[in-house]
Amino acid sequence: MKPFALNKEQKQELFLAYLKDLSKFHLEHCEAYRKILEGIACDFDKVNSVEDLPFLPVSLFKKLSLKSIADNEVFKKITSSGTSGQQVSQIFLDRKDVLNQQKALVNIVSSLFEKKRLPMLVIDSESVVKDRLKFSARTAGIQGFSIFARERVFALDDKMQLQVEKVQDFLNKHQGESILVFGFTFMVWQHFYQALKKLDLKLDFPQGSVLIHGGGWKKLQQEAVSPKVFKESLKERTNLSLVVDYYGMAEQTGSIFIECECGHLHCSNLSQVIIRNPQDFSPCKIGEKGLIEVISLLPHAYPGHLLLTEDEGYILGEDDCPCGRQGRYFKVVGRATNAEIRGCSDTYAKNFI
Image (cartoon, rainbow, N blue to C red; front, side):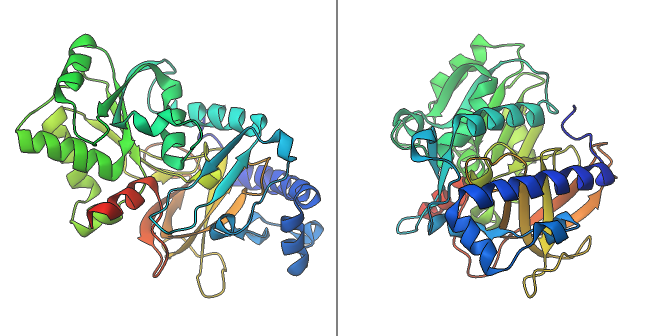
């Protein structure tokens, strides 16, 4: 099925049944999750809508080891991004979850370009992925998108300096081919665009190339760099006409929310968002700002299927985006007041404040 094929009615029916079953599975296999739900006296047989399903605050993963599998079934552990001194989330995955995350990512990103492997330029240092004992959200993002790569080159050295000659050699080697560029938003701006600007250098990426970036906008918003300025500036220096943002997190790796041609973040067949009033957690109407709840059908090894984030946003519409994708589309406004900084881009950018 195409990744954005389900409309409102189809999705509500599918998600309600599946998420109730998934919640019951975690109830039986995760003691901490069972105690939480017992504390709120949840009866799944009386739940009639996705909006009424119980959610966990995403910050809970910083305090508890939440998993619904045995220790010997843990295949990978991902830690969320965090600034110095912050607690980080720990996400435990089994082989099934890892495989499903890869399939989901391929399915979602396939709406941007053909399902084929491309030469990939990573706007980061290779050292981030070399330490196999540390699998951070930043590492997970790079490795996740590397599934689309037939060749991978890192644009930055270990000191986060742009390796200009290496990048130019890469472009010369792949003249006339579509290239996938991946990086976290602030790093792309600080270590790629700003470096090119300082050198007064322009690169000519081939037509059909795409830059995918994510991880938060906090630092760039402080510098008055809007998504429009970000895209226009990069196009001027690199000829990259397709620059795509995404919203995602370590706690729900794989089921990312991708930006469409209209600049809207979209829920795929595998995900949903609900905006909740921060006062009573009731669902907000279209256009009303509140806390973002992210929903994913993927988490099997841990109860991360219904999570209330500390991000604020609002729903723009459902089933009627001009891009043609079905489902909800929304906008992220930023972090809630007094919330900790998180996200690969924002936590890294903290070093530059």
